Every structure is written in C-alpha cells, then in structure tokens.
Length: 138
Image (cartoon, rainbow, N blue to C red; front, side, top):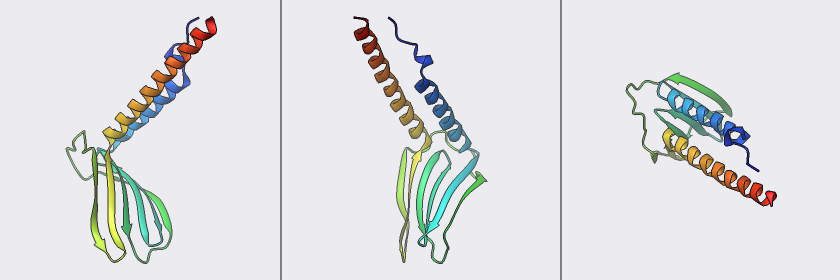
C-alpha cells in the first residue's frame, strides 16, 4: 500500500502559506517600515520590521501613560540590500533608567530558519507515514 503524496498533506499547504507570507513580509520591508509598540511602566517596547530585518527594541520614556499601537510608514532608505546582516544587537544609549537596546534579525534568516524546520518536519513525517504504511501492510 502506498502512502499519500506530500502535496495532499495539510502541513505541506500550511507551510506554503506561511512561506509566502514570510517572503511577502521580507519584500515589503524594502518599501515600508512597520512597528507594533506598547508603552508600560515608563518603557517603550517595540517590535518592528524594516530595512530587510525584524527588530525588537526597548526604550526608556518617562511620563508616558499606558498606550499601544501599530504604525506603518514608507521607508526612507533607497537601494537597500536584499540580505540585511544576519544578527545585530546593541545598547544605544545609557540613560537614567537604563539602556535603550535592540536586537535585529535579518528577514532572510527568519525565512531560511522556517524552510529548514518545515523541511525537516516534512521529511520526518514522510518517513513516519511510510514506516506505518509498511508495518500496516504486513
């Protein structure tokens, strides 16, 4: 008895959907910047994408009430590289409440990481389903 083709698996098509979404996000970072932010306990926490990377940042901001939101602006940079640096991190400023820090991961690293994990999962499942089919046929 033969196992079903990989293109009939829900996990294959769900992975295709996620991969297309990731690539679309990567392409959109070349033309615009998007940021999701939250202000709490006099700190700004932000997750942003732009310039070909995904960024997470913290920033001290005294005197601001609790707030959260989403912001999207056109990218000011021109001729951005397709492949941003894989990893960046650092402390930008030493202030009275601490440091402003950020971590940035190149979008290509996120896409490549997903493809490796998804491909590994599909191979594992393919071998597992094939083994069940062989054992069940006996």
